[in-house]
Image (tube, rainbow, N blue to C red; front, side, top):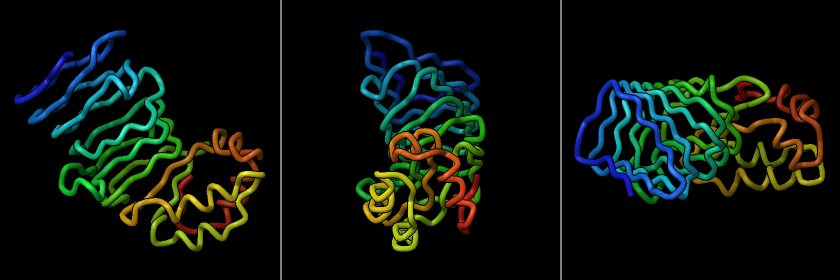
Length: 199
């Protein structure tokens, strides 16, 4: 077990890489102007009471299903592939996480949700990724759309299941198309008719 806790680290490059170790970041850890290189899967990474300020977070492998609900992120840049990640304050852990002023334009996001934050302060990746805004409040509208493919209805149903505090969701069109049994072009044709979408 490798632990970073109860301190502030500034202007360092931290590489999380091991075949056997678990990495614990926190509690009471502040990273400032650091580069965090994540080369381990979610099961080897624990984030708890961490503040990351003006950091670069690079994932060297796909980071799946990571919930950043115990991390306060401010002015950070993300690089790499993130699938099924959640950023911001999770309903069951109020005030434990937040995100503001972060840049995902160099990242590849899919099924990634942003909760209890101001999405206008965030930079999202362009097509083939796309971001739907205000998904919780627009769940009925988005769910009623004719999402293409044999499994498009699953995407439609998913909006109603997201936490009410979900303000944006980013998908990757190639992955979504493969899941639904359609094409990225068919998805783009649908979202081009929508308001509240960035691509």
